[in-house]
Length: 463
Image 1 (spheres, rainbow, N blue to C red):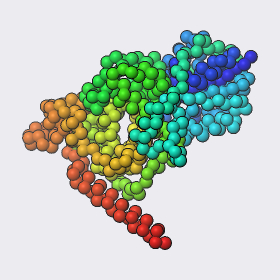
Image 2: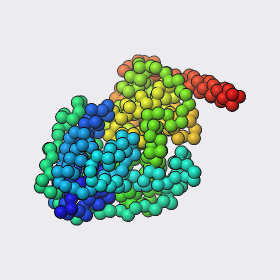
Image 3: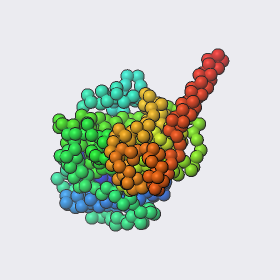
């Protein structure tokens, strides 16, 4: 009997799953998920994402049961457990979805070396596979717009349906799904999104029906919350990005939304080409970042004295999610106003975001910090102006910063300008920095860095 193993990783679904569809052609299939002790022992095993993972695995198991199968769960060294599962059933092939992080790519290569069976790697994590779109003479696109132009013209693979049936050999026995407390300490955010393909498809359907048509005009509307909210489902592969593209294609509002899917692929190809960019500057400027633990603590707690920044940081803790516009505002504040290392912010976001993953999270942080792919590395988001523009009546701020609930309208964005008696009644901090002074200092530092780089280049050329 021909038996195959399909290893689920960041692809926790049964719709449009190339690896699952390929494995299902065998007489019997072992749908396998391995809790990797290397990940569980690492710094980014956090309650929000691990809880979402458990819910997604429960939903995946139920879907497989509906197809006549089940999910087999193991725990330990990922490579050793996958190889052991394949050996236990005499599998001829192991099927797995390709991925983009350095960790994931090393793990797949190690599996190829150790499995003793054919390891077949499939697409499915991105719309267009990383490095399938490359510029002439270079290994990847470093600027988004030319990548977007080429990405739009790139042929897509065919969308796949759900396998008709899944037959699992009786010989393979795994473990029960563990409890969250068995995997990670701490509690999840109180308003975190539910995990699983079923919830993801429902979220996509609601977005297409209720908000897609107005997405282009309203995706920056902070209080309106008109974004898709499907990022966690894309991060865990509960939704296929190609399936999402097909679902929205041709509908009003689709074009600006599809552009966001392209950004996701753009960062994936950047990370595959430059694995060090996960935690090293994509384009180094030689920044001499501040060392200010007190300022960082105020930022993480949402106590900076800048209402829209504080609202974003509290939304992060409350929901495990932050509106995209708010992510840019608060990232700019950390890296430009406070001049703190982008890696601090990236790690904090990975602690709390359900959708946190290396390519999107860290390269977006670098875009804002000025060390990434932005062609304007000194882009600055004035937090007060941004709040006034994208939360003009202050509803987003009041939703997450209850200390300011009594401040009416747009005045909430400048509590320092309130009448003294009214300001004195608010249990809310003064700004930890003056924005204008902080940005003037930032620009002076960057000018000094540029001068030093020019001098170093001149010395090198003279030598």
